[in-house]
Image (spheres, rainbow, N blue to C red):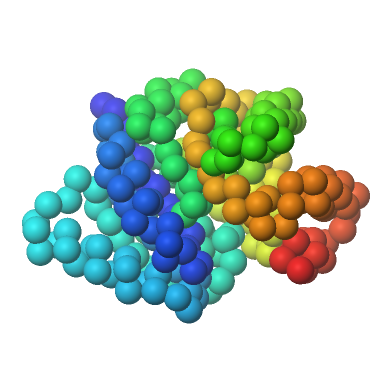
Length: 237
């Protein structure tokens, strides 16, 4: 039997992205078994938009995907662990709300998981700027070389393994790095060449070069032992 997939999506003030997210997941072929949205305390219209979307599906009695919404304390690690606790799929796929999956994503994941315990997609920032195209290539190259994935690469993992290692580490940032460190000790990741398309808003808002320097600096400091709380304060500053 084909393995089933639960998609877990942490949400925090993503009202503008949610309609695109719903359309993207419903357009997947095949679709996932389940999609769990975990709100971490949004103060925009995110919760209302999600509730309205799910209510419309219920009234129409038409659900290709079992959509669910729960609320959690803020923090991606906390939110994703809360969503994973409700997941029923054989495979957990962790998706950022501003990231779009390729149409064949579920088929590729279920095939890849036959040969590996976990994996991730290549990523493409949604910008035509040549520099951001290069940044995307560098992220994919670094990930393939280090076997460490970033959260916006749609990390997927067998649910039993996720539970076995205790889920995402309870820290305020770099939780994806820590998770991958544990996972690569178990098995090599499946590095899918299909690309997820993720928002370039941070790069565009703060400047490409400034963001590149910041991200490399933060990763280096974290590697040197600087705390996740310190990294988070500088990242969001």
